[in-house]
Length: 459
Ligand code: FAD
Ligand code: NAD
Image (cartoon, rainbow, N blue to C red; front, side, top):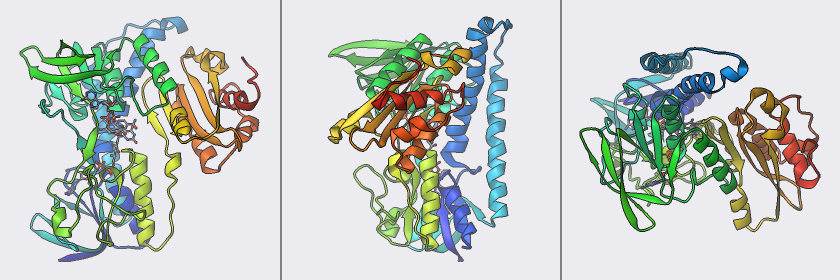
């Protein structure tokens, strides 16, 4: 039996980061991964391949739709297999990168599927591995519709959508959440007719309502179409594609397309882990329950990332990975869950941090909001990209920032001004008086801050 200070199960952004940090803390660490490559969902079939395809398709759509306005006339052609090949090369560069980091930090990689045989011992193939501390970071998997299992040909999950061999003529996306709008955008830009079926009365329902409505209008201008408050009740695969039966306001209808992307959420993954051998039971959401120190029912077994409660985000998993490795090493880390940013990498991007207007009102907080449209931002004008806005939410009495919501090019970068403001408990006056370079998109944040208790200059 090989014995380690720390064994991490899963090499996603939760697990591989925990392993590196634990090794940096001077501990003897192994990381068990069943997939041939390191990096988990995020690197292999999530964040990175999707952002690679978003980048390529955005470049194409920009040249096609705006090139002539800039005085650039080009004859554009899509080489889809080159685009997919580039995506694979981006992924594999980072796969090698994590391998290198493991070598540099002396983290032992154990290839294979881990399963508990007792609370201190794991079996991987015919090898037994034991550890003083075990970190479960086994992540999540796409949730299928119960009556329509994935075949990854015509009924696809995000994994299938990242591996198509050609751009389909038509794509139905079930679920207008973040995966749906990101991957739907990719194929719409490349020429597919993309139609969404969403259960709720708005897209990306966890966003601030005003932002969600504005976002939908922008996507509609790009040709995406939406059926909201609509339920899929049945579906079948046909010769030419798929046929879905849908129900809207009590009346049934049917929709056909070449492919259906099912993007209705992800669920924690613990298959084959034999958690019962460690006397760990799942909660009603099928997550591994943990205390604020990420300890499961067994104090020496921790769990982090998508397999526990909280937003299913790579940076949340990584922050927890660092925190748990530091806890094991006797440090006192802290994660500010109220300041975890959320980014939708469409064009323009949608980013948010902190409370939505609805959440603040439900909490009974006295609030004031400030809005600033990109139409009055000079950099956005130079870019020719004036769809979007910045919305800030402040506490009416203390003037502290409570939430920031942005639709803009590079919103995913801009949002970190809000993250830092929340982290340092800044007031919106601090944000309004801090110098912002001209001309930048970030000036829209300063103007929105002015708009709360005074007036913006440029409107
Ligand atoms: P995972 O990344 O799922 O890693 C778990 C690992 O554990 C896997 O490698 C798995 O093979 C391994 N494993 C499981 N069980 C065992 C076992 N018994 N033995 C050995 N190994 C095991 N998040 C963002 O923040 N930004 C984004 O832009 C973003 N884009 C996304 C796009 C898509 C299409 C998808 C699907 C997800 C996206 N996410 C994004 C979410 C992000 O990928 C996840 O939140 C993140 O990967 C969770 O990290 P994790 O370490 O908890 O789990
Ligand atoms: P999601 O929760 O973001 O969206 C699912 C959508 O499907 C919701 O709008 C929901 O109302 C709808 N829905 C649920 N059941 C339905 C049904 N039966 N019929 C029609 N609509 C239905 O989930 P997702 O888009 O699958 O993404 C999964 C996870 O991956 C998310 O939690 C997200 O955090 C993560 N992710 C993050 C990013 C990012 O940060 N940019 C990108 C992709 C994925």
